[in-house]
Length: 191
Picture (cartoon, rainbow, N blue to C red):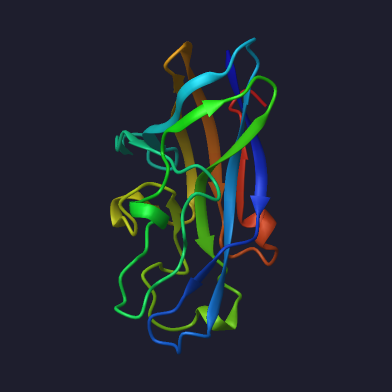
């Protein structure tokens, strides 16, 4: 069995701005899930999938992207000089983890946002300052960019040799708050 827990805010990673010289960088905050294999043997081909996003402020609205999320630290987060997004080293980001040993946690990026209070973030960028983006392969994805509001995420955690788990996570986005760690809150709906 593999399990999921919210691992709050990690504020590392950088975007190089399109309109700025190559040395200017903008701070980005990531929200990650900590995935742990609680079984006796390694979990194989582990994937965390974003299956649905419900808009709690507008109950009749939802999106169903069904896209795998990126494993943390497996992708580059820069813009190259030709102003194209570099998805990751060696041909792309890792969305399927080959093996997860028993008892060893691994992080998966769920979403991220550009720090709206970072003065370097002013200017043209692939990522808007007033949106939160899911860490999927086709970045930047306007269909998976969310403004401030309340949402319910439907995630599926699966592995080749483990039963899949459905995980519901409620997400509150308020990018007007002054503290970046308070701008996005993730929690289980039963709390």
